[in-house]
Image (cartoon, rainbow, N blue to C red):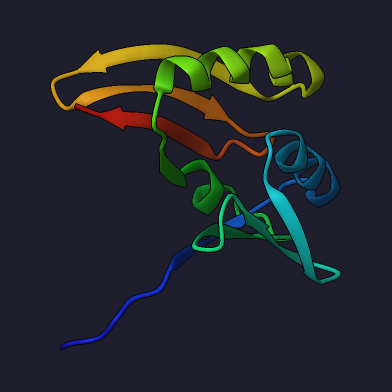
Length: 121
């Protein structure tokens, strides 16, 4: 199959939709409201995801997203400066780990979605 892909967008759920919307805006994503129960959050025109007002525990507890960044050390510093883990009860930050392929840090959002922010060697 031959085609030209332009973007890929995951659908993620939210236990508390309004809290998650506020969280992702503070994290630096730009929100475009699609409907009362769905928003698109963008980093760039091609890096985005859909946040839904839907919560299925098994689904959300097993959702992970990986965002490649250019400098994970700088990203970690900026991430900790936001203090999201102090503002949102269930948000959890995990410091940078060095792996054979590069390095990454982790962030659990208010619903439990696990984000990997990584930099490849």
